[in-house]
Each structure stands twice: as structure tokens, then as C-alpha cells.
Image (cartoon, rainbow, N blue to C red; front, side, top):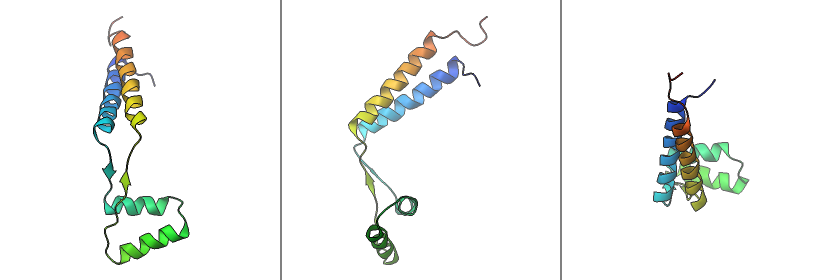
Length: 96
């Protein structure tokens, strides 16, 4: 599958905007369901999973907070910018 100019531009724009969002927000708090999903799928120690199971049974709303490192936002913005510039350097679709 070959990507054309418009697809490169769109992918670059989406990656750039995700990078901007990661730079603007310092942390993300997951919902109870998302935290439980990650706890079930990740490899944790027995005491951590037991603590989560006990707190879930008691009705406690344990929520995980994710703090992405600063470099991820810069990296995504850079990759998005390069993809946008690459799309502008390509031939227009339909041009022979």
C-alpha cells in the first residue's frame, strides 16, 4: 500500500496534535474501569493485585494517574512536523 500526499499530511497532523496535547496536559487520570482493565492485563505482584481486588470489592474508586515524560510530546511534535513537511514536498495527487 502506497501512501499519497494527503495521507502523509493527515497522519502528520494527527501525530503533531497528539504531541501538542501531551505537552499541554501534565497527567491523565484513568477511569475505574480502565484502571481495572490495565491491572488485569499487566504483570503485577500478588500483593498489588490483591490490594486492587480488595479495594474494588469494597467499592473504592481506585484510579491510576499516568504522567507521560516531557520528551514524548516533543518527539511526537517533531515526527508530525517532519511528516507534514514531507507531504508538502511530494507531488500532488493526480499530477503526472
